[in-house]
Amino acid sequence: MEKEKQNQGTGLNISVKSFLTALIMLFVLMVVTYLLTFIVPGGEYERVLTDGKEQVVPGTFTWTEGSIPFWKWLLSPILMLGADGGGTVIAIVIFLLVIGGIFHCMDQSGLMHYMLLSIGHCYADHKYRMLMLISLFFMCMGSFVGSFEESVPLVPIAVALAVSMGWDAMVGLGMSLLAIGCGFATGICNPFTVGVAQQLADLPMFSGAGLRIVSFLVIYACLMGFLIGYAKKIEKNPEKSVLYGKKDRTQQANLLEESFEPDPDKAKGLKRFAVILGCGIVLIFLSAFVAFLQDITMPMIAVLFLAAGLAAVRACRMEWKAIGKHFADGAVSLLPAILLILMAGSVKYTLMEGKILDTILYQMSGLIEKLPGGAAVLMLYAFVLLMNFFISSGSAKAFLMMPLIAPIVDFCGISRQLGVLAFAFGDGFSNVFYFTNPVLLISLGLAGVGYGTWAKWSIKFQVIVLVVTSVILLIAA
Image 1 (cartoon, rainbow, N blue to C red):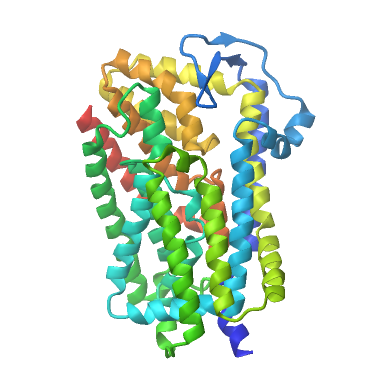
Image 2 (tube, rainbow, N blue to C red):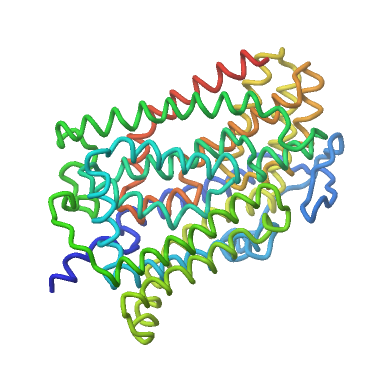
């Protein structure tokens, strides 16, 4: 009974309230997107295949009839699996099922509770140092290797750790999800945004890193000011927490109040888990320099996470039959998240099938060309922010937009490096704010935090980032 009590709340289960909120918002967006196909005239660019992805050919836009049959729109969450980018979605789905299964096994073995208890007591007198180090780690993961979806397994651990230290789930989400979004946006060596964008803009890969490093440091300072200020505020007065009084899984007991007793089996399990997962993190960093690893990053992490979890729970003497049962239960618990992923992906499918996505690109690029340098780079930033609402994949947007951005910045007298930076800023920060991003919805659901609560809490930081990055772009321009 005591073991069940300890394990409760650390497993991965999508909050019903969070799921329903996201479901309604995405359905409304699907309806609005469908209605746009009746309002926005159709048009399309010619496309060529580059590295297996379709790339827009500038100057080839033509008007055409645009519409999508109702039945196609209705089935778009399924049909999008066979469209461009469908393979990536399938990989994400499998990735999530593995994560859900392994986390549930670790939860039921008592390993999660033991891990949080040991870390909590290790950093009891250095909580804010831990917060800064974990945030820096996640930012580096996003900035140097372009890790984003791969961070999902670590987000619930960071959330549970923050709660165990006497803070709330928002701090945990801030030092993991928000941090990796900030790192992804500054993109010092991000192969999926900066790397792809620079190749398409005929620039040396990862060149011009000086300004991105400065941006990284400035954004890290802003993030630390935001998170530490909030953590100290709720530590002083718990009623200041945006989650205070809410009946959800984020209101757990402070593990610092529990006594820590070493357990040889669980310690052995944690060591196995850390070593194998550490190898995975090293491979993620290597993927920034090895093209082959970039193509298999997600399957590779899924396999290593599976191996790490199985090795850990076996050290805790969990039988294979029990592992199979708990793994299945954990995988099933994440099925609602898969529906959200499919619905989010259907938005891009509707825009493409209705032939209005290229019309939006054409009209916006024409508007930007008419502006002077400083205004043009800010409008370009805003344009990418708009497109990121509909298309969350950074590399997909790069292939779609960079062939248009490159000649636009040339015409406006802006350097292509600055155009790439505006693209990276527009793509990254909003990933952890837009409800169309499935990784955000899944992470919030696993933490039991509603989107409305997250948006209200993070909007201040998003505004700060928007102002700071706009200033950086203007100075550079």
